[in-house]
Image (tube, rainbow, N blue to C red):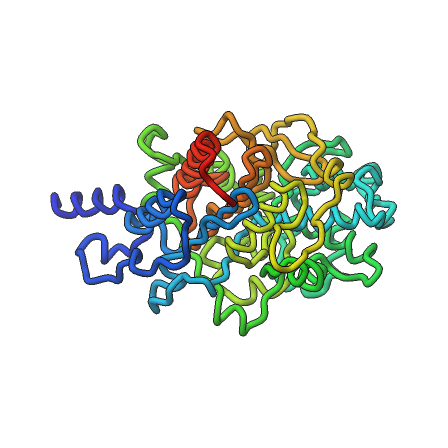
Length: 449
């Protein structure tokens, strides 16, 4: 019995993701640190050390991190395993499902349509979609939807199925018939999956070619900026390049739920208690209204990523995410290079996009958030309170953030699913080190972009 207790304690306290047999019995398992790829500028070497330690400690299975500073890619690292069972490395060809981090790019697509005069943040959604004006939704504006105050964060009597997303005309009837969650009163409550559903219907109605958001990204954003960001995935792409997702180990989830929070570096956020309780706003938002009510491991199925989901279904890599972040850190201007690329967002559009709304308590995420009119968040992260980062994160740990003052564009994605709300010890350690390095370089006037 003593041996069993010791082994279980070792498992609970050790890195969370390396398979149990390797951790307990020291089997000859592959070393994830041997799979490191990419590069790092000399001034940012400590980022590589942190990244490598994350893998060695078992905090990662496979991951990538990319960082721009002053319009230059200074870190582009990937390592670990895209598929642990086969030993397939997590390398420069790997693509990753990043969940809600894709909301940032979706917000850019909407902003570009605002720039073209096709959409207006202050306009009622019913102007674009008359049937939307049911169930106390007649006064809901596009801004309300972008900032999660549209009152359609969950479906009352409908469990979303992934198969529905293949017939958007039919699914639109489900969307428009849903009554306002708060009786018509603008109330912040996260639209985890539904924001993308509703935005996609608005965009395909108003786009001159009646394209979906994913089609616009594929036809315009990807080729214009030489990035990869797929909102729907072919079988060939999925099987050849997309990393498997690994759920947070159940014993540690239970330990985090039962034991005091001070015992953990990243204690379970209160929303996870609400998430497992049917009938709560959080459960209806994060479970019932998302495809097939899927758990992390369920996303290792092609059927889940085949149709578009503009709030959660972005398959990309950290390099592509970081380039978008770097352009925003460059005030919407393209990154200088051999190829002349177009402006992402013009100054007037950017001003509207970044217009700050009032900090508001979110009824589903159980935290106060400050959103921009265009739909991204303003964050003062733990240990980085002196600097405001803009962007968003994805379930499990992915991040797409930028800071214009420091000229930092930061992106991180991974296949090991942690339980924090916005980043965790893996990514935040690298972001903190990035800020420290940038401040040191600015003080020393040492770095040359």
